[in-house]
Length: 365
Image (cartoon, rainbow, N blue to C red; front, side):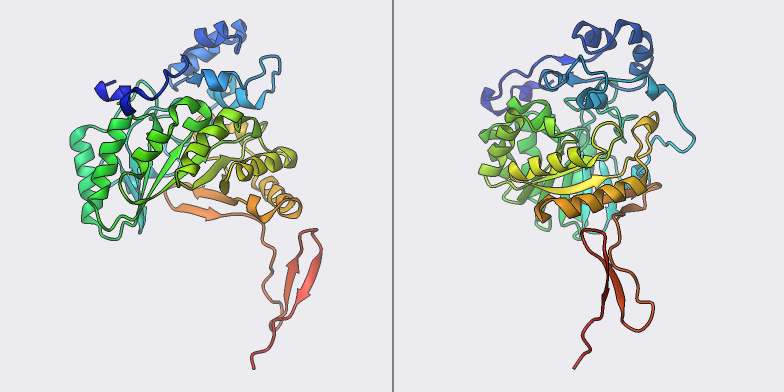
């Protein structure tokens, strides 16, 4: 780390130790010794990272613990399937310069780094993130990326991602914000992060000030998949952003054994809303290598969305989304409640209890 890693005039507390190897996980009681060899083979290909804050959420006595399932490697990751891809969302095909993904007309991804505080076992970028990848976007590549954004006046929103942008030192984040501030046609900056859950002590009022320093509208999208991730510490971290005037959204992935039941999804979405975070996306799993054990059939996902619509507030409803493989973008895949008219202008619509009704729009006067 460079001198900026002190960050925000030393205001950040030292992050808890991060478990980065099979040996670390065995020592912490999160991995049986008998599984060490298989996990070491996985670690040779994909990064391991479990922060102290996340480790505290894991029940080591529960072999099906939903937090452990997300972050502690499983031998099932060695089982790669024919339909899995190293770049399932097709980022490379839409990367005109290093660090930029420009798939949609009015927004770009700016991938600033390749490290995260924790490494999700289902990550769609698992082949390119981790300590064995280049840590930061090199200065010349960052300059080219900023030049690309400046040269394309249709770019309204810049989404900071990676890796996790909130693992950057405060000084470096401030420099990024200043460079975006100089691009007049960019109006919105969004950051995608797990830090409020994984390292809540990094989130401070000073950091919120850094994010707001550009004068642009700023949103923070929190990735969490299970209600236990919304701990008191995580909620307090999010409140520092929200109280400073930064709205927050949620992103979750539908994962087998983690949140693929209506009780867990309900608790998760309510936890977001209670923390003043608007549920935004519930993603269908991207088919990255070695993630098949997390797959939930789309039909089950649609049924869960129907149940969610029927039992909880509209504030708690995320969009159920599929990122079409090959770089074709995201499409909503939730259930359809309205059928095409079979004759004339008569529609069939399903209510929240699953009952069908006939709807006849009023004739124009």
